Image 1 (cartoon, rainbow, N blue to C red):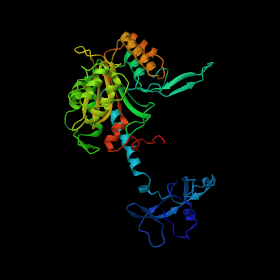
Image 2 (cartoon, rainbow, N blue to C red):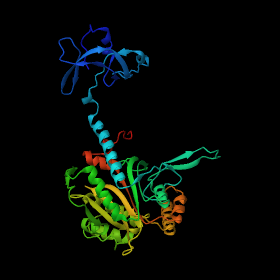
Image 3 (cartoon, one colour):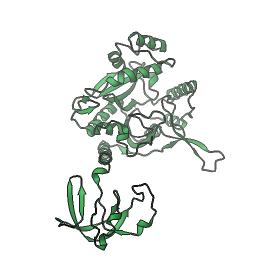
Image 4 (tube, rainbow, N blue to C red):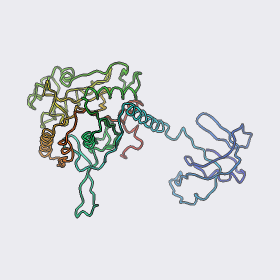
Amino acid sequence: MTAPYPKAPPNRRLINTLTEGEEATIAGRLRAAPQGRLHLRDASGELKLLLTEPHGLLARDLVSATGHREGDAFAAREVALLVRHTAQLAPAQRRHVRARARMNAQLRAWFSDQDFIEVETPNLVTSPGTDVYLEAFSTRFSGMGQVRPRELYLHTSPEFAMKELLTEGHERIVQLCKVYRDGEWTRTHNPEFTMAEWYRAFADYKAVMADVEAVVRLVLGEAPIEVEGRQVRMDAPFEVLTVQEAFMRCCAGLDVLEANTAEALRGEAEARGLGPLAAGGGWDDLFHELLVTWVEPQLGAPTPTFLVDYPAPLAVLSRRRDDDPRVAERFELYIAGVELCNGFTELNDPVEQRARFAEERARRAEMGLPAYPMPERFLAALERGMPPSGGVALGLDRLLMLALGAESLSDVLIRALDA
C-alpha cells in the first residue's frame, strides 16, 4: 500500500501506520479518483476508493519490517483502510486450501450417495498394532487417579476401531481423519497426514477397488494428468497387475513367489543384475527393497495401476486367496510411481489373526523395535464376529498433490512440519 498524501484528512491520518497483511473494516464507494485521492493497487492495476467513514482495525501486524514487536497499543486506534496485496500473500497456498476443502466436500457427498455413514474414532489408542514397518508416536496419560502414567499411542490408522464398528452392525462406514506415523519424512511422506478409510461389510477387495477407482476419478477427473514428466490417462480402465506379474515384468522375469526364501530371492535378483541388495535382513526386507527400487517406479503410467495379490506374509490383516494360499487379497493403487492406497479383503478369523500378530511381535523383538501391546480390544471384537468385509485407506494429501500437480506433500499441507 502507498499513502503519499501527508495532508490527509483526520479520518485517514493513520493510513501510514498500516502495514501489509493487516486487516481493517472500510466503508466508501468506488469511483474514478481525481488527483489527491487514495490509490489502492493490486496485481493488475489500480482501483480508486473514496473513503467516507473511518472504521476499526480488525487485525494488526505487531511485528514491524525490522522485526521489532511493538505491543498492544494499536488495539484501540481507529484507522481508515487496509490494502492487502493479495498477489504477494501466497496465492498458491490459498488455492491449495480451497482445493482441499472442495475435495473433502466431494468425497463426503460421494460416500453419502453410496449410503456410507461417516464415523469418528479415537486418535489415542492403547495399541497401534504390530506392523514391523510402522512406528507409532507414544504419549503418557496421567488421569483417572493412576499411580503411574499410562502409555498411549497416536493411531497409525483407525482400522481397529472401525472394524469394531463392523462387528456392531454398521455395514458401510467411512472416516476422514489425521493419522500419525514416525519414521520417513520425504517428498511423499509426512509424520502427520490425512486419510480416507472406509469399509464395506459383505464385500471383498474387488468391490473396494471399484470404490477407489470411482473416488480417484471424482477428484482427478478424466483428463490426462502429468506427474514428473509422465503422462497418465485417467479416462481408460485402471490396470490390474498381480505382484507376481509386476516383478516378472519389472525385474527381468524374477518370480517372487517361487523365490520364497531370503537366499533364493537374493540369488535370483543378483543373477539378473538387480543387486547388490542390502546385507542382512529377511525375505520381506529384500522384497521391499526390490519393490521400491525396481517395481514401484514403473507402475501407474500410462494408466493408474492396481497392484494386487500380495505374498501372504506381507498382508497380516488380509484374507488369503482360496485358490492360492501363497497370496492374500491385498491391493495398492499407483499413479506414476506414487502409492495412493492400501486395501484388503479383511481377515475375520480371530484365531488366525492373533497368531499373525504374535508372529509380528516376535519379529519386532528380533529387529530390536519397540514392543507394542497386543490389540486385545480388537481381537475381542473379532471373537464376537465380524462379517466378511473389504476395506481401504487412501492418502488424501498424495491425492491432492496429484490433483494440483504439486511436487511434494509439503506443497499441499496447510502447515508442513518445520524443518
